[in-house]
Image (cartoon, rainbow, N blue to C red):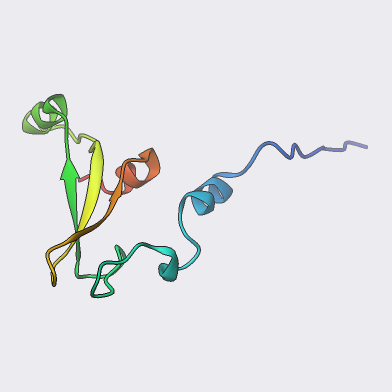
Length: 92
C-alpha cells in the first residue's frame, strides 16, 4: 500500500494567487469617486526602466517596474503596485 503525505508548507499555484489578490472587489483601494482598479474607469499606467524601454523598442515584451492606477473621472492616482504578480498581469 502506497501512502502519500501532504506537506503543509507547500501550496498550489491557485493558493498563492489567491493570497496575492483580494477576495472581493471591495478590498481594492478606491479613489474619491469610488473607482477601484477592476473598473473600466481605472487606467493602468506602466513605468519601465531605461533598459525595459529599449527592450520594447527592439520588439521584446518588458515587464514594468511599477503599475499605477489613475481614475479617468477625477484624474487622480489612487493605487500603485510593484509586486511581481501584479506586474506580470499588466505586461503588454
